[in-house]
Image 1 (cartoon, rainbow, N blue to C red):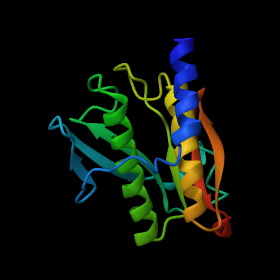
Image 2 (image 1 turned 180 degrees about the vertical axis):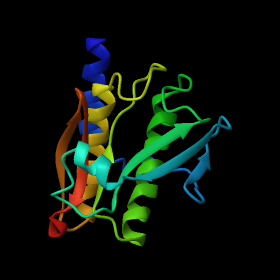
Image 3 (image 1 turned 135 degrees about the vertical axis):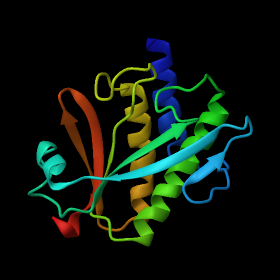
Length: 168
């Protein structure tokens, strides 16, 4: 487990920009992998009560979304795949989120790395995935002027958000 963590951290720092990885073609926030897996990306709009629970209500307006993706309907690990396939999926997800931010008024996006195990939502976060997502998103922030990153937590379920600091 520690070896996997070290490998993921090294990969995140080396290819956090994903420049050398080709993304899948996508349409309407969906795409298929070479294995035929359907991947869907969702942007779940938080309501005022949810923003209050996350301690974000006083910080941002109400256009804050949670970014979620599923493979064949599963948010936990669907099947084991190669790192190449995994990074290609992640690159495509982040290309979709960049298009989403550029195409509408968005004050912020949250990211929570779901457990690789099938468990109830918010029961266990995947800290390795979270670090990888943060490394990738941090690189993409260069393309979103005035956007910054902030760690968030809900009942020991750690994630992060990016938001437009002009909307604070």
